[in-house]
Image (tube, rainbow, N blue to C red; front, side, top):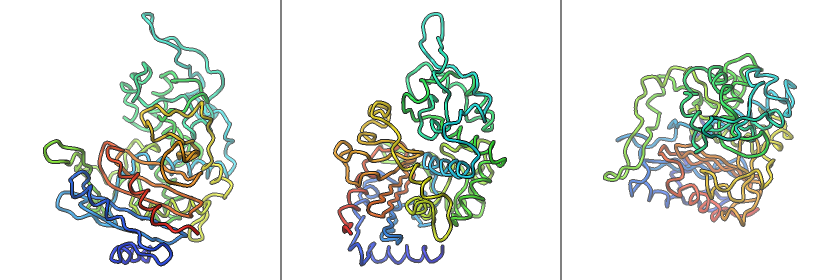
Length: 401
């Protein structure tokens, strides 16, 4: 671990130079800092298992320069970690992917599906088939998010689903109808939180303990977890948002409870981590389940996770992600690039990626044997095209094998 940190600093001082790749210059990203659009960021790239770019710009908090060991709120980049945990249990034979979720979570046995709403109230119908674990992994479960305009979304918004434990969330979800029939539509929602609860039920361990014992310790991800230890709170990056007069302003600085494990362990979006830690996790995926002699998953399982499982009829292009999902399919926790022409961005077919609401981002290209990670803390996500520009400058610099 220390050797990788030293390598990062060395590469930074050399302007991200690698004899294999030539010069990878990400200094164009600094304009976001200079124009007060973003507070600070870390850009990191690995190819053929070696760090070939590691740069930091701007601030991690007011008057505190960005550091390579800065800890970021991962938000939805938690989802791939939860999906890996589920697949580890799958490999151990605890369930089949097409098992009904209600087999393990009995509260879901009587779920109904929303049909319509009129003056007489909600109209519901029986599901045409059971929600499966595969559905949860692909976001085709019928579970919503609370972000949409459906009457069901309004129920999500008033249910306080994150108030309490994961089991409390399950009991509340069981009282809300499904937004659509399982398996018929991709909707980004609460599916991965339910997967987190499934990990707890099957393993007999809390989600934070399972992650630590089975993923973080084996991969030496020493700065990852659902809370930040008191001795590392100074590493935590503040969260910013746009401000009309100042360009940007801090909106999250309170760290009073950050060192206490939360009651609600969100597999959807509760983790903290560093660029270096997430690089180790991403490299494990790129290596088909193995990293530095430690194997978390079989190569076949990673292949299953990173393949597209959705048809064009199920995968939308008009939800809140908008054009980001054009040319994309979805695997078990990742968007999968299936059509480079329709996607209109550089990248190899079957590359996979995801992002977090605080503008954290990772992108894995198996064909080029490459991982890209960009970390900042700014909401809303995709407010600026920084991820696209980062990806484009890396592909321009990479020399084909």
